[in-house]
Amino acid sequence: MERMRETEAISLTAQREELDAVLQSAHFQRAPLLARLLSYLCQKLFVGESGQIKEYSIGIDVFQRSHDFDQNSDSIVRVEANRLRKRLAEYYAGPGAAHRLRIVIPLGQYVPRFEESASTPGGAETVATPARLTHVWTWWLAAALALLALGYGLERFVQRHEQQAAANATANASAAQKEEALLGPPAGEEVRILAGASRSFVDHAGKLWGADRWFDGGTAVKSSTQQIWRTQDPDFYRTSRQGQFRYSIPLKPGVYELHLHFAETVYGPDLTGTGAEGIRIFTVRANGKTLLSRFDIAADAGASGTADVKVFTGISPAPGGLLRLEFDGDNGSQAALSAIEILPGFTGHIRPVRLLARQTPYYSNDSRWWSPDNYFLGGQITAYPAPVAGSDDPELYETERWGNFSYAIPVAPGRYTVTLYFAARRGEGNASLAPAVAPRVFDVYCNGNALLRHFDLAREARPGDVVQRRFTGIEPNAQGKLVLNFDPVEGYAAVTGIEVAQQ
Image 1 (cartoon, rainbow, N blue to C red):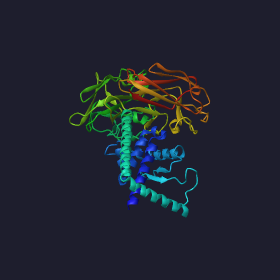
Image 2 (cartoon, rainbow, N blue to C red):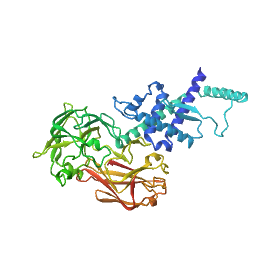
Image 3 (cartoon, one colour):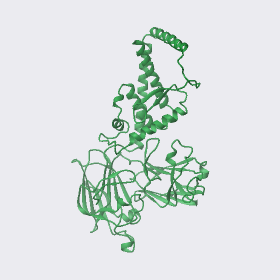
């Protein structure tokens, strides 16, 4: 029995050493949240709590979901577990190929296993011959005598190593949490309301918007406007609540980020023969504080029939647990609202904005959530079948928006870092839609200021490689937007992704 306990102790030490080696590798240093997930799963196994490794507990403990975490509507645990399996396989096919132990997360499970490699570093299979067994027993006898001579030395060594491994895991988790707090969205209750709608709606990002509720006053209006610019979800803006109205929305205590969605779908060239500016002007208040004064949807959006989003930070419910939103028309005007979105927020800055030129959302290898394309005007989206080189997350770069286009990204007042993601192509795209072999020389402007001039994508990157350009100190325009214009100089402009983070 004593020998078995010693063997188990040595085995546990080997497992911890393998975990440490994996977490310290470049593969996992570049993916801190995957490292955090792996550390959590293994530490639970080490302390005998493998029975507590469930999708729900992982969502709460690792990905900071709230206690009402719905595993059916939020697939983050399953998505990230699959990414973890893929990254472990890549690691053991490369830098970890010679390791005696391997960490495996079986499909359909979350409890990790430590398995011995099928072959020795020299490639020969381990065969249990009688001579080898005799050698093994001789080795164990020598080891047992050595353990008796060392007394409690090994035990103290194991304890010190376990304490150090636990400290390293805590430090890794703390660093990951700090990075997520700075760059990722916080977890918590989310509220989405479609103003004037009688039924719910699921958008391109897979988010559920509920039918209109908690309102007082106003009239539900449905528009026949066919085209709504700067959105992939025009149906979203074809209903609205108009008039003089209020919302009293119950919220748990906390700090929230408020997004108000608008689109002028009544007034415009078809009705007035001119623009819609100056016809609808109103004021918006939250718990008595003015958010928008003399707000004109068409003037703010740049035109009628255009999606317009306003972002507000530091929103909290009143002492009674309600967020009261008031929409009052000025000088006989009727206020109008398309939707309300309330998200758990940060103190002092907005949630990061990450857009990919694609139709669906995406979790990148660093466990960050990217929204499908939004806020754009002009251009087309094309997907490319061949993966790019120069990135350990080629799927992130498999699509792009190309042509002559712009983005109007809504933000709160402040200074921002804008990162643009590009990928050079080998010409494997659909030539009738996006001739990737054509020149990609273009300018990029933000609110009229040049970020890139005569940017030659083929020159900036070897074919197939990815390019990132980061710009700091960017401020929104008077309408609270970062307007990014991609203007062709030769051929087409192109971009794969846009990331906006408040400084």
